[in-house]
Length: 77
Image (cartoon, rainbow, N blue to C red; front, side, top):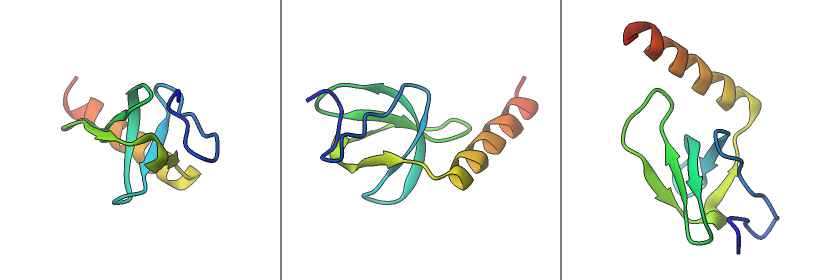
């Protein structure tokens, strides 16, 4: 398995995805067959997620995540 769930979704590095176990949105930092590593928008502790629990983030969540990251970059140049 190459990081795909049953639907065939394979998250691209740098994209935003949802951990369906708890609804958290994160940026895909790495992936392999046994896990996908997600990082919260704006930084923070990364977490592992099983590939079958990772789904594409809806457009509204992607926008929210990007705004969070942009705001953090402004505060911490």
